[in-house]
Image 1 (cartoon, rainbow, N blue to C red):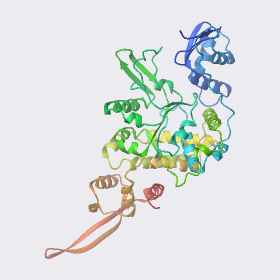
Image 2: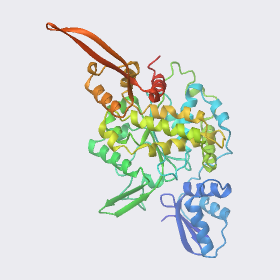
Image 3: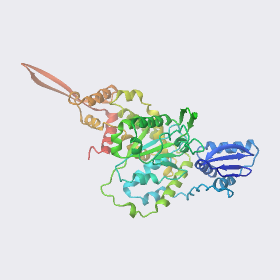
Image 4: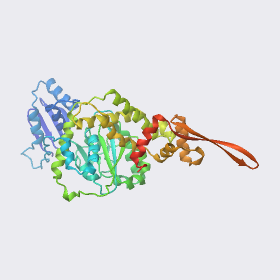
Length: 461
């Protein structure tokens, strides 16, 4: 039997980290420690959006005319019963006072500061928006990917997973010895779900991989329904930022799966530095202390009010997102037809830009934030070689079939302008004919945008 503690306000039942909150003898909420800690954080520093659990507890105690003592609730959440043989659940690590972001960055090697900041933008973004941004972290082995993700390992921040059962994402039946049905979607609600390495997922049979990918797709909007003959219809209403890691080889070998999620995940590459000066054994900071500092700062960021986006910055952001959506869908007409549009991606980029502004304690998003996040968009654009050809000028008949589709659709959407017309005379049998051809390039609206993207991709190195 699970241990329990009973007082006037609350009973704790330890079963898969579930806790029941009682007001005047009536159970008013069932929650987990991470969700309750997030509620306590809001109660102590009320800013941003009020958690639903906070409203529920206050309303229930008020309705039942019971005195609400938050400190007593917290004490009961942490204290096990002394009249039981069961082992108490390990207490959650206490987070320190949050340091400044600049102090954290200066402790990291210069070639990893941008990467850490990019991941922080995702983990610290709000989880109550319609579509929380998702990140796919792609990098060669031994480039510090796992180390960076471990910096967000705290129960109130992330659910970090190395491996999981086939049915874990939205479980339809409990394990044999489990007290209740559990799922990764439920346990990561309001937090981050971090999967260290997708190799384990892609190493399964194709039907299982497709099932997992399909479930992820359906869960993206925050609501997921699953029917099982054993447990009936289960609904998951959860919002989470999902971050997955994978090597370049894993991504290339399983791109047929990832393309199904390409419109949902934003991709970011950790480049291997030419010389990794700082090895793990020579870091001048304590790993656990740094992890707690980073998680404490993330919790503080989540509690901050959202900054504003000035109109000129907002216009530039939307224009950039719009151009990105078009460029990454030019080759495949079906992608263009089925794309969810600018709105979802624009919402995600706005949320990330506001999060970055909060990281630097600013009440307004600046162009610096937008410039910092550009690589997230540009790395989702494939066929950049075609863009490079069109930047220099391209003659339709001289390229391959894929380029032909790209070129045709670019003309269809009026992205190209003929910048040079070439006429020359040639002999055809005994007659002389004049051949006229056009060289096409990006129009003024796209020329600078494509140039910047290609420079980031290394085309001009």
